[in-house]
Length: 282
Image (tube, rainbow, N blue to C red):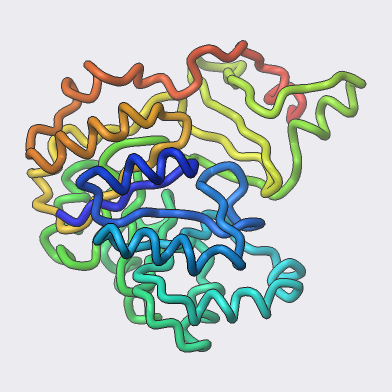
């Protein structure tokens, strides 16, 4: 299995380079918020070389839709990205994928959206449009994931363990709410729905406001999919836990119980709970 692992800091990069990970997933400054290690365009070549020198591949991930106004303002920089010596470029923005192909990117393109592709017909649409790989929706059943693995084993990239992004908004919802009530507010909050027990994790950064599921997504037995590509999302996760996941996957001993021994499964432990964010939207 070719294992893609998110990098969240320069220290984490050093440790992941020493691990059995195959692909280091990094972000571009100004486009990834707090989700990934943010690399400037000026230093991107050096980071790529460092990763390649360790025998690993590089994936530059654009996790959020790029608004048209920002796209136009950054068009020159994105043209430069297309010509970098990247192995993969992942994005959930269809327009960005077309743009990179048009400007002669040789990187393999991954359509990476955590909720959008629920069946093989949807996936084929993106493959026909120029993408090389795709991520099936996170919350579909294991049986549906088996169908992807059976029919598209070389193109499907499955998230095996990590943080599950539910939704994102380009609006700074937390800041706006606390401005209205004239209080200084946090950038990270627990959210609890008023009508049921569901809980979530909210994060605001320079890309907007993002809502995550409160518990790690763990695919109990990746072997049942016989998947060729696996992905680890390590936001909010201690690097020691991520390294343990990598070791278990490479040793073919990965399981839910194994992850539970080393991880809390709760992505927001330690934060104070609030439901004010949801009250503000009602």
